[in-house]
Image 1 (tube, rainbow, N blue to C red):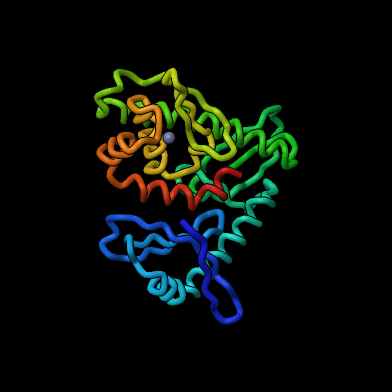
Image 2 (tube, protein in one colour):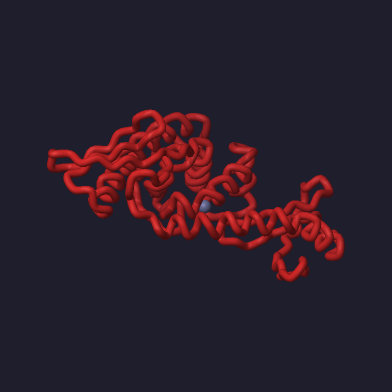
Length: 241
Ligand SMILES: [Zn+2]
């Protein structure tokens, strides 16, 4: 990996290059959620060729960066008012805030709406009601996915001990004792991404590290894990906030 740049009109695009096998001779450009531009290239691709590829897609890259910037601003300014979008299982729902005479908040999915009824409509009560709801959904969904996925993995004899743990930058983890933690916010992601995180952690029950044996195992069990991971990375900013 190293940083390079190309000039495009009056702008400079900075990117890093990651040389990888198995790209079928192709240069691939990714704009990551943290707004870094990464180019995957087959080993020995000349830098001039890589720069040409980046220039060719400069407009697309700039658009992606602008979108990420907008999402970032949006996510930072969530106000928990009607009309905002919130995620659940990879779909966006329109938040609808209602006033209720009950003491506690109630959250319901109604069609394309996520309806939150709270005694007072301030942001912190709405957020609290939503957090409780997401945690409850996460417990159910993750338990179901663990139950569905573990039988195909020979080294896992039963659903391992697991818990929900809010984390700022991680979706899951596996302790040396084999106890899994899953981020409740993961329930906002599509099921394919949830399964990726669950299988990633279950593979750690066999290899407690990120060695090449570990990745070989993960790839055997989930050949398209990189695609799922990328999809999740793209959503991270929106769903972790
Ligand atoms: Zn891991």
